[in-house]
Image 1 (cartoon, rainbow, N blue to C red):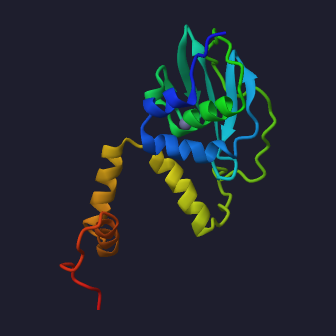
Image 2 (cartoon, helix red, strand yellow; image 1 turned 90 degrees about the vertical axis):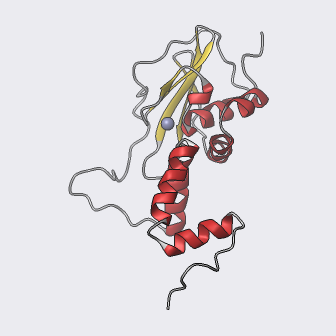
Length: 182
Ligand SMILES: [Zn+2]
């Protein structure tokens, strides 16, 4: 059977920041299974909002549907969850059927009971460790187009001297002209 997609192709198709983030979370993706002619997995099981993502070849085109709202017919438009599913599938030598059907729902089995629902009304959200918050937000940030991300950071850095300083330092630019906090 012809190879429909490989890691190299995927790597060159998706944005590097998405690929890198997806590669990291793909290592924790352990519920990959065949579904509707494609691969279905839950991404971000350690985070408050795991996302089910499905990818398969619909009419010969790698197509994805994710609980985060992404529906894409080209890997370059995939969210980080979808890329993670594809990476996990490739790592496990998932036997891609050549003809998949884009599923209407990703809710195939009730096998993910959520002990604490962070969105339940009235329920106090569990405190999140700073490290977990960084990982969660990094996952979110990785799904944004670089232009959007840059603008977000710039808007905040413009009003936050510490962030501006960190931004300039990360870019290797001098920060000495900044007014130091007393
Ligand atoms: Zn997604």
